[in-house]
Length: 337
Ligand code: MTE
Image 1 (cartoon, protein in one colour):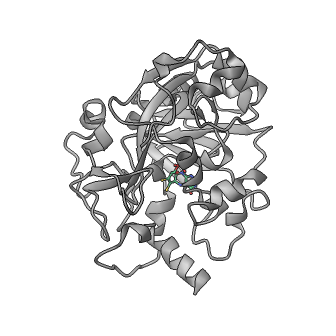
Image 2 (image 1 turned 180 degrees about the horizontal axis):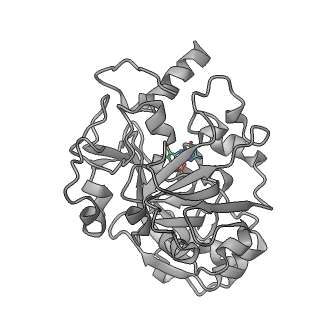
């Protein structure tokens, strides 16, 4: 789907949203640290692990998740000196267009998504393709807590404690063939359970699709997450399984995955297809390459309000340059945005 969109030079932060949705919406209408210091917490049993973060809302974790939680490597990766975003903000200010275009829509509407049972297909250029029940898919992997910055292309950011496992470990299990050069991810397509997919105003050609180069996917920072804040993923954050690629804009971190395919050609991805001048395949966080309608040099760290906007400088590769810059040696990042 190709849409040629007009450019508007300046954009108030309150209006910053991918332009296609900004337009569709117009059609429609006419740090505080969340938890106590982790080290100060008493030793908790598995059932109480959710209280690692003070304001977390307990969910109803599937059995396989509770069973894995006991062996989790807590704080395997963290962000020093930056407050973790309160759970309430991380779960009520979301982008998940399958549930609507506004930031509060996913929390309001994602309850309709039944995530048990859930199955997942791994196919394409792999020696070991398969269809798995989610609990079987995750069985081989130890959960790690990865506290990462999340920087949205819309210029807001958060710090989120994810629970997941390296994507590289999955790739080793399924054994990509020599033809595999990219990895393609697909979200569930189910208009009955995802009201945003029924809306005539949604410009997205469902299902939502994302992709990575194989060497990016093998980078140890790229994870598949099944939880956050010491509990399973809330539906609005992409339950039961999502990608997290912390050096890229948030739209690469695809939610509620049902298919992972190893492919030879660069996959056509959702946002690049919608507005290729604005959203590239790479989508690396880059303060020196502005979005056509706003600067990417700065970001609003949530919670952020009129009287305390909490604006900070955006870091190259979202602060993960030491770990990932070598992936892009020789690549013109201005052209490959
Ligand atoms: N995945 C799907 N399937 N659908 C979406 O609309 N939005 C993306 C990404 N993954 C999206 C998605 C965008 S634009 C962002 S910024 C992040 O999810 C937001 O993740 P969060 O809501 O957990 O903060």
